[in-house]
Image: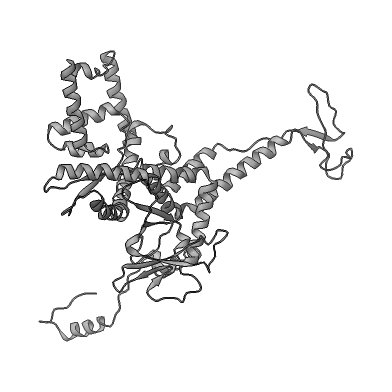
Length: 491
C-alpha cells in the first residue's frame, strides 16, 4: 500500500488514497495455515499456559514413563548417568575470597571445614542424584534441616524428596496463590511448600497422608524453566521418550525376526500346481534331523531354508541416527551418548564436544545459583557461631568443578604455555579449568621446590623428558594426519 503526500495531490489521488485506507493487509505464514496435509500433524497444538500445560496429571504421566525408560533402557540409563557424572563429577570445591582482616586464615578455615562437612553429608552423591532426578523427573527437591546425629560440628543436612511428595493434597481446597503444592506471595516468589510426609506410591502413602508445610528458605527446588511463568519442571529427556520406545521396539522386532528365521531349520514347500496331486502332509508338521543322515521328502514337496533377513545392513545406521536425535535434546554428542567413538577422528571429537562442554558449564552455573549458594549461606549461618568466625562481610566465593581431560595432553600443555606467555590467560583461570584452586596448587608447588632444593634435585631431573619423535618422518606424518583430520571435518 503506497503513501500519498498531503501537499500537491489531485482529487483523483485523494480518492484512491481514501479507498486504500479501507484495505487490510494480512501477512501469511505457511506454518500458520491449516491444510489437509498438516491438520493432523498440528492437531495437539494448544494455547495453554506453562503451568496449565504441565499440569499435575501430565507431569505424573511423564515422570512414570521417563523412569520406566531409564530403568529398562540401557541407553537411557547410560545417558542420564553420564550427564550427572559430567555435571557434578566428584563434587564442587569451595574457594573463599574474603579480603578483610585475617582473611587468609578465615578462608582456609571455611574451605577446610566445608569440605569436611560436604564429605560427612555425602554432598557430591546427593547432587548427582538431584541431577539425575532433574533429567528423568524434571525437577529435584532438597530440604535443609538440622541433623543432630551428623558427625560434623555443623549439623546442617540435606534430605532429598521426590517430586510426587510436593503436591496439594485432595483434602485441601484449591488455592489461587498455589501451583500443585507451592504457595507464592504477591510478587510470585515461593513462600512455602506442601510436602507429603510419606511417598504417595509407598505402602503407607496416599493422597490423604499428612502434609508438612516447609518454608521456602528451607527448600531447594532445582528445575529448568523452559517457559516464562513455569513453576514446575518437566523431564530433560521429554522429547526423546517416544524415540527411546521406538529404539527398544525396533531392536526387539529385529531380534524376534532373526530368532524366528534361525529356529526353522528346513521349510517344506510343494512344487505341485494348484489342484495337482502331492503326498499328503499335515500342516505345520515337524521332522527331527540327525547329523549326516539322508532324508527323502514326500513326493511333490521341496525342502528349503529360510533366509535370515534381519538384522539388515541399515540396522546399525538406524540406531546411530535415532541415538543422535535422542542425545540432541541434552546437547550431548553421539559418541558420548553411545559411548562409542569408532566413527570419529580427532578433529570431529573435539568439535562435537564444544557444544556439550558449554552445556555442562551452563548446568554447573545454574547449580551454583540455585543449589550450592543456598547451601553455603545456610552453612555459614551456623559455621560462624561454631568456629567463631565473627561477622563475614562481603563473603564472596567461587566454586571449582572437575576439569575435562584433553584428548591430547601434549597439545593442550603447549597451548597453555603459549597463553601464559602472551598474557592472554592467568594461572587462576588455567587451574580453574582443571578444577583446582590456584593458591592451593602454588603453595603445594612451593613446598615441592623447597624440598627438591633441600635434596639437591633440579627441576630438569624431577620432570621426565618429553617424548621425541623417532624420526623427522614421524613428526611430518603426524602433521599430515592432523591436516587430513581437519580437512575431512571441514568437508
